[in-house]
Image (cartoon, rainbow, N blue to C red; front, side, top):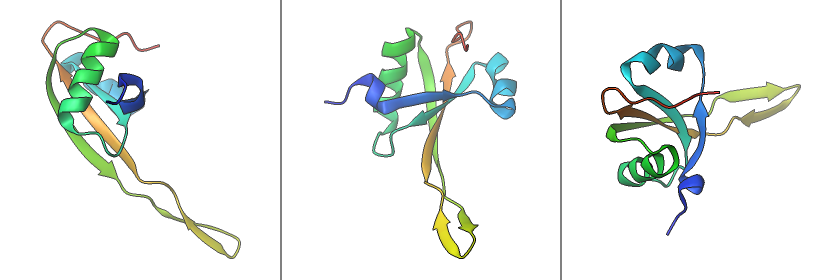
Length: 92
């Protein structure tokens, strides 16, 4: 059994994600192997809120070059979590 803090790595606080906060939507960086049910339970356990829906997507890594060496940035799995009306998460 995975711990909630192993599933939810961090909350994403960017300009784009801040625009969705008044609608009750928050972005999280999550473990790639986590499914929607595990993400929902982890957010409810950590932040003590009611989750209505979870949408996930994988942000694919980009090709980067340093001098003659080619490499890739890591692929990240992100989740957009919608909370019940009237609830919010305090983002610091």
